[in-house]
Each structure stands twice: as C-alpha cells, then as structure tokens.
Length: 452
Image (tube, rainbow, N blue to C red; front, side, top):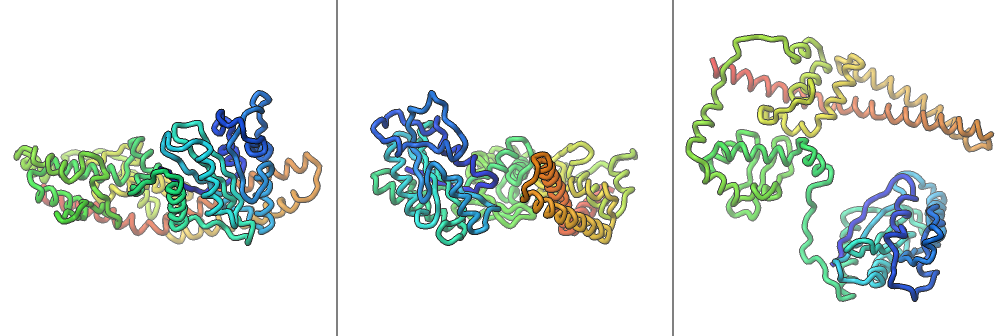
C-alpha cells in the first residue's frame, strides 16, 4: 500500500535536495554489496559535505537526466537556458509504503520505475529512499522546467491522479497492496492549526450553532427551525447518505459527520431525545430583552465619532470583537458576522490603514493607492539600475553595498505591494461590511421595539 503526494517548492534548490539525500535518513546497513557509484550521495550538489566518520555509509540516491554529483547545478542550467529561473523552482513528491511490506531495495526500485514513467522523458529528477521511519518511503525532487522543451511541469488534479494511478499499478506488479477506496481531503493544516489555537473557523462556528440548536430543541423539527434561524441551509433528507449544512455566506456545504463524533445524524438525534421538555422555556426566555436604564461612554461611542470608511471598518472590528482587545463572545455575535471571524486579522489590517492615513472616502482611497503605486514605480526603476550595476565587476565593498541596497528596496517594495492589496480589499469588501452592519442595526432595532 503506497501513499503519494506532491507539492511545489520555492526559494533555493538546496533545501529539498539536501532533505531527500540526508545521509541519516537514507543509510542502508543491509546493502554492503552495492557499488559506491550506485550509492553515492549528493554532498557535492548541496554543499553538504559528509563527515569523515560517515564516508563508509551507503545511501539510496539516484537521478534521472542529470548527474547526481551536479544535480542542482544542472537544474539551474536548464532554467537559465529557457530563461525560467523565477517562480516555482521544483516539485517535491513522496511515496510512502505500509510498514514491513517492502524492503529498502524494492522501495527504491519502485520509486525509480515510477519516476521514469512519469517524468523521465522530459524532466530531471532526484530519487531518494528514506529508511529512518517505520514506513520506508521515497522522495522525489523534480525540476520545474523541462530539459527537452522548456515547458513547466503542470501540477494539477489530473497529473496527481496519474501519479497515484501509476504508483498503484507498479505496486500491484510487485505484489503489494493498494488503497482500494482513498479517503477525500481532510481539514487543511491551516484550519487544523486555527482550531487547535482556539481561533474561530467555519467548522467550530458550525459546531457551536448545532450545539446551541440542540440545547434548545426537543424534536428534530425544532432543531431544524433553530438552525434556519441562525442562517443555515439544511440538507437533512432521510434518503441522503450524509446530512450536510451550508453556513450563512458560504456556498460549499459541510457534511456534519466530519465535525466530530457528536455531530453525526444518529448522535444529534440522540442528544435531542435526551433533552428535557423544559428547554422550551429557555428558548422562550431568549426572546425577551431587558433594556439598560443607564448610559456609559463606550469604545463604540468613540468609534461612531469617526467618519466614512474609517468609521465603517473600526465599527466592524468592534462588532467582530477585535476591538478593544480581541474580546470575542461568539455566542452573542450576530449570525451574519460569524463567518467573518475567519478574516478578523484582514479587517483589522484594513482598519489600521484607513486610520493611519485618515482615509474617509473612496476618492481618498484611490488617491492613496495611486501615490503608493507611483512610489513603487520609482523604487522598481531604482532597483533595476542597481541590478544592472551589480552585474558589472565592482570592488568587493561597493558590490556588497549595492546588494544590500537592492535587498532593502525589495523589502520596501514588498510592503508597498501589500498596501496596494489592502486598498483593493477595502474597495471590494466595503459594500459587504456596510450591508452586514445594516442588518445588525436593523435586527437590534427590532429587538428594542419588541422589548417595549
């Protein structure tokens, strides 16, 4: 059973090649009969010289369409030849086997066979077999530019599916098992880390909505009504294998069983049936609101003293709980704002820019963006001049000074590009922010009228 994956690499070629040919991961204590040429490492390629104490070790490292001693340099030669040195510099893939199912030599043979079939006719590839974990696995570093025609490797669903199919077929040819029914993609690492850190995601917002609705329901009909009141679209047809919900503001549904064991169809029904009928009294009490008979100067009052876009975004950050000190209370947050909790940092950045430059109108925003773009053009022109200068033979001191100045200008350009992007986001989202705040104000006004 082999698991495959591939992702792009940006930056330096040293890191991926150095990783896949790491001598501690590719050491093979059982292969003393192989020649030194077959097991030579990529030390010269990656400037990773082996210690003298380790020169007797043997490694599983092979290459296609390049010399293993100069793989990195040959990658670069192809890129320069076709003038494609920027962007994605390589692709890093792996193929991992079930523990105990393959020997290291067999795994390396399978990896080499797969690399030849998938990439051998057009791309340079480094193949290394790691034996440092329970699962013997292959790593592949593929040049992003073809030595044959200069075309870039296209990583997409179709090419990944082909990679998986070729891996499965070769595994079957070697008498190995394969995954008959691959599982779909799980939660992304980004969302997983956000949830682990206690931050709001569409998944834990959905869990909270379900928990609230379950706590106030005695029947499934009441549960569905509570979910709809929270803005969720439901797909709870008994004929469907999986029940799903669509959060407000989203088009893609979430299958509720993916939210956890307490959120399957059967478990939700059990939780509702365990409720006492007294939960209906709790639900009724939530419709009553006792008005405050006092008035204090609050942060929101100071925000309301601002004007235009600045006021709009500061108010929105306040409603999201980002101001004054990121004090969120998701249970009291209006339903239309919950999904925007995922973008709190972005709204805060936009509010800070508007406050920093006192931007109140769309005209002010456009004017500021034009000034930033003009500054970017000047810096880019200056950097281009310095780059031309750096290509000439210069004294060491002057060359170092020129490179430092180029680096400084690049950092400044990156910050200005970010500022332009924030301006564009404000222009795109200001209408959405305004609509949400109007809904919040309208609903609050209705609550006040009901309480009178």
